[in-house]
Length: 434
Image 1 (tube, rainbow, N blue to C red):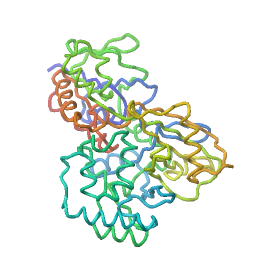
Image 2: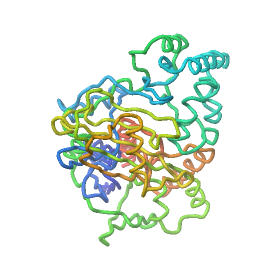
Image 3: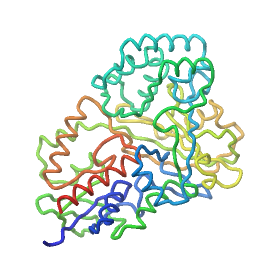
Image 4: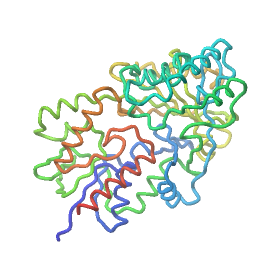
């Protein structure tokens, strides 16, 4: 049997995982990446002695397989952290998650949230088959919904919760027991909750150490190769240089909404489905600060409208190697979309003003480095059109011989672990069909 030609579009975590798993089974493939380096959004950059990731990235593991894989790749360059995450609301900091850490909030709010949660328990365990707002109210009650769940999720998704489904949840939102909620009203809860109570991060260097370790085991990675055309009938891709490459199997990690611009003669009904895909974007500002951070926090959530960002994190608390001595660094995230825009000419100043308002920066602090990453595709929006549009689009692409892989290729809310598994799953599909 002649050898099949396998091409992977994109050398982010999903594409690298697919290639790594294929080549471990002795199957050759080629990867084409538009950027000058591998990693996708899991890249890092060094500026003036500071190492910044392209936005915040941490590793969480639900599966022994992925933990052992990452541990094998990074070896001793991997450190486990007990998460220190916080929420800033009502003028004060409380531990995350809000629903289990009401202690420290104004007494009237604690009472409203606790009574609402007890009332919500009468609903049992609501199914994840309604809209997101309904699930929030039935799960947590109107108090927790009003003071955190609704404002934070509206700000993060840039979409009202009633316009979203619950298909993305999959354990991302912690649901505490009544005892945990009550305990969290009486004293500060020292035990982290949620899927990311513990996380891992490279001991030295940024999050790019993982894709670099994967890539070091992979042959035939071609960078600076932007794909301009995909021809399904000829089973051929065209690269920005003008060269063309034939394939038998094609794995794409390109964001799904970009595909119609590369494929000619796509049926109108499929094009209409692509137009139903929605997403938010993330304006990421990284800062290098001329002072030492002594609080040890990893990240903070901001539900209230009077703060421009929804989250900020501290790189220096992921690894001390990411900053020069006696310096600190942070990443700040602002969500926006075409229906919830931001003024990009003013947003940096708004962020700086808000950092001072909440006390993260003092007026005398010197900012050494400002680094901006404007991320077009942040998170897919799980609205009422999402399931049908995504399902039919992926079915169409598979019928044309293309597997769409990873967070953006398969258009899902994925963790880094999920992305690695997705690459393995698509490599398994090809192995079973070569």
